[in-house]
Image (cartoon, rainbow, N blue to C red; front, side):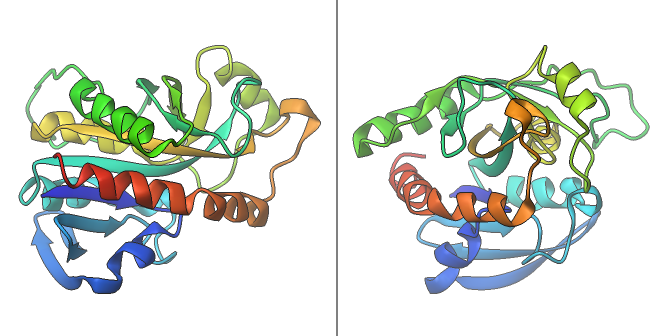
Amino acid sequence: MLGIISGTLPLAAALQRSGRTQTCATPYGDVILTIADEMCILDRHVDGAVPPHKIEHRANIKALADRCDAIIGISSAGSMNPGITPGTIVVPDDFIHLDPPSFFEKDAVHTVPGLDEKLRKSILAACQDLGVTVRNGAVYYQTKGPRLETPAEIRMMSRFADLVGMTAASEATLAIEAEIPYAFICSADNWANGIGGVTPDYTSIVGQAKKNMDSIIEIVGRLTDGV
């Protein structure tokens, strides 16, 4: 079973049409999952009701880790790299998150964070099979949200990272702790604040995310055959 976490991209509703929904209890709260076609789908924003800074990532990863063999996150991101234009689909290979969550609240368990390379390669292979243009490799910088970043913050972050978002690095960190493979696909949906003199607009971000939806659904569908 492949776990799929979606968010700004309206992927969950599109994938859930033929699935069955269930509420799963975890020590960190209840999680709504939809099971469909060898996929276990989770909407991290619960149809827009949960903003980024209120997501209980521990509950989400725990629920999927108990049921799935691997997890793929689908995330919207802003581009800080002039070579990654809005509309690009990206498979990051590293991330920065300076205040990550943890399952280990009392124990000093020093895991080594990262993304699962085998799963990343599976995503890239699916893109190649489908003829979907994708960028292999980028560094994702996670901020807290819900506000977007200042131009000064973006200037600082762009020295070390290519994309900025609010969710995926938390999921990746917890997946390592839960010992389940995790990788993610980014839809670069806007220029980060100040890049090229552009100020982000949330309505435009969502609109761009929708343009990549069909391609990402195809990628996810191809992956369910092999994970």
